[in-house]
Image (cartoon, rainbow, N blue to C red):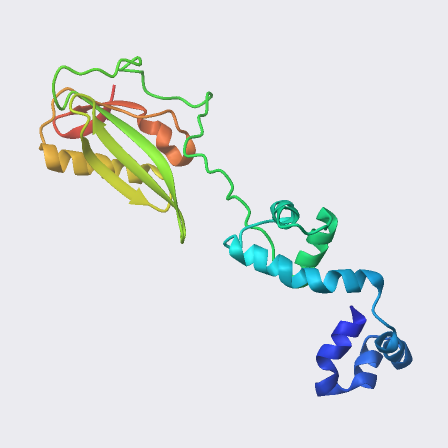
Length: 217
């Protein structure tokens, strides 16, 4: 590492000043430069462009294990540890799978309104039962959270809302969109959601819509 660092900075600062800053003798650097390449360096030299080409050919997502398998399939006698070491020298790495996002975190200890549905999601007509679903969608700029309100009778999405958070307001906004599309008077409508407890979402797990407003039963 010292030799590479001196090589990278010798044109600007000179060998002696750089070695002095690193507390290394200039003679050590010059001896290392005169030393012939080691057997490992000779083995590594032809493999580095091969690994780089294989990595780029596989959309630059392969990690050490998959790149090692690809190199072996291509007929190269190389070890997995060698692949990992050369990837470090090349400055390349695999793409890690994003951490799983949980859209619902139930809290058994939290209070919630009574269950008005009891797992029976059938309805005899429209605007009798709406079901809310909060999910997440991975995008290039991050995770987006989408709430959809579905009419249990027609299976139609009557309201939706996309936000960058899982706050209760996201669901309320979707519900307000439903009321705007279906009308303000929705007597007897039950709005059902999951038992998520994050950000106060648990406040309206089961509610009845009366006269166009949302109220707990």
